[in-house]
Amino acid sequence: MIEQFKSNGNQIVSTDVFSISFDGENEIEASLLGLSISNLAFVINEIVAEDATEPQCKLKVSAFRKGSFEILFALAVISIGQISSLYSTGDALSVIGVLKGIFDVKKLLKGEKPKAVEDDVKEGYVRVISKDGTDISAPLGVKILFSNPVVEMKITQISQAIDTHNPEGGFSLSTGNEIIHYNHSDIEDMSQTIPITEYGPTDTVQVSELTLPILKIALQGDAAWSFRFGTRAIKANIEDRDFLKIVHIGQVSFKAGDKLSVELIITTRFSDEGIPIRESYSILKVYGHIPASNQINGEQTKF
Image 1 (cartoon, rainbow, N blue to C red):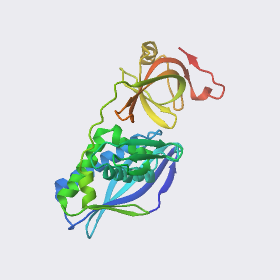
Image 2: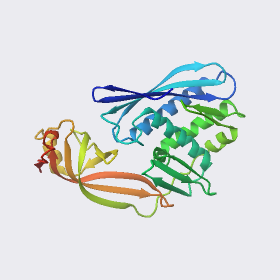
Image 3: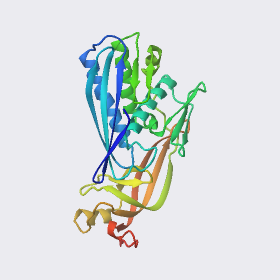
Image 4: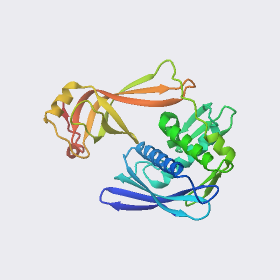
């Protein structure tokens, strides 16, 4: 099936289908089936959550086909406004591509840490190099495998479930363009957990004054706000108590498209191999509020 886009007001809905086919008989233990589907749904949602437009996704099991045990999935990704980047995960086809890339990286690494992970942001790909020097290129979104240990665990559990279902078989991932088969040897490699990355002795900290579009606000307590930062969505805690006070008592209101002028602190954590594996964000100071209606002339309410 070719990916389809549909506009609904300011929403863009992209849909596509893919399937996972377990080698062997046309039956499977219910517990293994449930684990595989729920883990896959978790991984898909985590991939989509990395996108800057904060899209939503719906994953449905639409049919079982005869033959080897095949699960047909229908994926819909709902984005707000235009998709921000050719290489974003704001559309269904890109999400499926990242999922395939995650399987491929797990197969490559065989439960070992990568020797290196090199970004090619311009082309939208990452080069993952194993300890023996073998490398593959995959969509940038596969880096979630290194930054989100739960995703790594879920993929490992899916591989182990497939191995339990048929100790001599593998599985196939079918998209609209290709069918990729992973044999039993591949499943053994993918069933091994990539070791938890040890952090280096220090993190790097960058402080920037910039304007951030607001995606979600927190009206109570110290919950994180969501912003668009470049082509990504980020969550940041606001440390400016004076600003939070006037928000919580209702002295300032927000509408879609508003921005904040802030001092942003970016903390990047690196692995012991020098691979950036996690970024966290906090806002030390809020300088001003720029309503969507004032963005042409740049006027802002200063704090």
